[in-house]
Amino acid sequence: MRYLTFFSLQLISFVVFSQPSSEEDKLTANLNFGTSLPSGILTGRAIVLYEIAYTQAELQEAQKYFQQSGIDAVAYMDMDYVLAGIDPARVYSKYFTSRSIRFFILLQKKNSQYQIIITEYNGTTTLVDKSHASWTLSNANFPELLRSVYRFAISSEKKTNFLINDTPETNVAMNFYRGKQDERFSPDVRQFKLAIPRFGNDSDDAALTAFLKENFRAKYELVDPALSDAELSDKGFRLVLRFVHTRGDAARDILGYDMSQTSSSYSSNYFEGNELKIKTIRAKKMIYKFYFKNTEYGNVFLGTKWDADETWLDALRNHILALRKDLKI
Image (tube, rainbow, N blue to C red):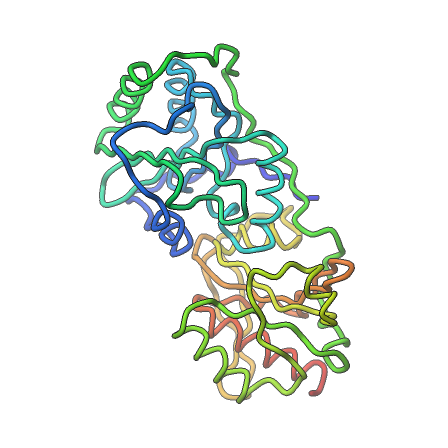
């Protein structure tokens, strides 16, 4: 079980604002913004999803204003964890539903502006959609932005959330995988047909198809990315290829690597032709990391070496070529 201490991750102050990840962009592209706060924001529970560029002091200041407004922000979570991939998304979605979460508050920093987005949770692994109300506001001054949110909130509806904690939950235990994490390749790759989820867009799916046709010698089938592990198991697939797309340090934490020692960068194995080489990628850099997952028991096979990379195609190439070399297929 992984213990994610969210405020404690904010130990580094960033001189410039970070750029949002593509996963974050995909999320906000599915929002339908209006001029009013989502109805019930002063009645229901909310989760704050923040970018790593926010400092602990800024998050504490945000909580102070949310509490005064009557917005019950029950927990603060690192956005790069929540949006890391389908496996984490399914775990988080189950958690949000069990906690009766109704809203998300996104804290972003874009183009020298602080931005707050308040949107409704849709109750699924996609988290949000255009059929639910969303609202946003930005300002170069964070305290002034929070004061504006306060004014909008108290003028929008009657406050009913009175028992709001001064200190929200920031240390949430998440077990992202029900099986074991194994730093090997599964020998089942040699024997059973594998499920390879499509990306769901033409360009990436075309690149995926071409790469697999040229480089992957095992039996596989491209499948609907929305299929659950149980559905894939029922269809006869023993293993499914999955990936996370997030910061390197977050990826290693999610996937169960030893996080007892912090590092500013990680050595990653990659291939030039058939030659194995090593490069260094900063721990805060957005990366892709592929792995195979047993559909019945949930065991995760990470491979023998860290092989993450900055594009999905490079990360997939690293993983598949390493698998071929290790299993001799």
